[in-house]
Length: 302
Image 1 (tube, rainbow, N blue to C red):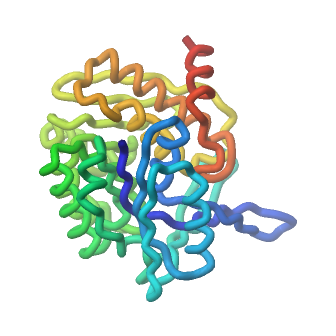
Image 2 (cartoon, rainbow, N blue to C red):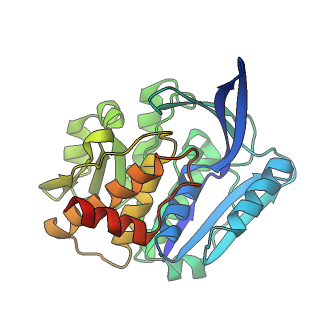
């Protein structure tokens, strides 16, 4: 079972219509997106997050109930609004973010019962909470509880310039979580921020996953490396592509604790298809592929 804990928020996707910018409401937040991707592929998933006691929070709670999770643990915070991210999408499908996130709900997370950690194989901890001291304390405590219970901890850097204008502050805030994680994910740009030397020397015992956009992805693990190419698609929106990739990857790693190079190359090829197919529609979770669709595409490219 995969336990995903962290931000769930509303993505407001912008598009020009008749000279006006019109925003479309979509569910988002990396841990929620990863949970949705894994569940769509047949994995057993539990999601925990926090929303405000407002109309946006009600929308997200309704969305969560429809995603096929084994269980959901959603806190409704009466004192804070639901977090929103305004997303601009350019002509190539690339996106940029502007967060509405002052004293909002996403990092005021519920306490995770010991039974859920006991049932989990992988505990995925979101990164957005690390911008706040209370969120960093929560994340580290949860990761330590998971490790003490013999569970693998997964963590995606998901650096956002709007949240961390100074990359050095981001690096300092993330290092405790990276030290505690067993499975860590970076984009190419994030590798530049954290540096190849840091990843090679400090994360040598971790399974390091690096997404390369249209070039696919690669992995590093205990002195070995490998990867897989991407698949060609017509891109509409890259929002959530990395989360679809990571959700696909975690669905392959669930219940598998020993990684051979052959297994990892296959798992990364599978995850690449998940991420690529998700970019063919708008929004992070509305166009996630199911297992049959991914396997069919894999057979086509082999």
